[in-house]
Image (cartoon, rainbow, N blue to C red; front, side):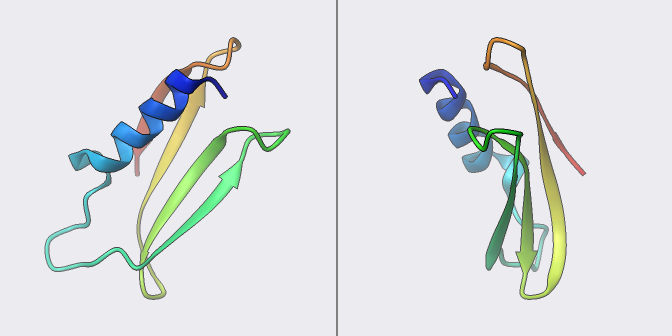
Length: 71
């Protein structure tokens, strides 16, 4: 993962994209990794045992971040 990709992930996490819904608190993160383990594929955000949302990362072939989607 490039330094730029790391900064992009950091910015996505700190932005409104990764904010907890109103009245909820993020208490746990769970990661899944791309093959090779060098970049995250998803980050799941939980309030206790309740899944709040998932960020899914799409990567370009050169290792740069293409897109982050929240679902």
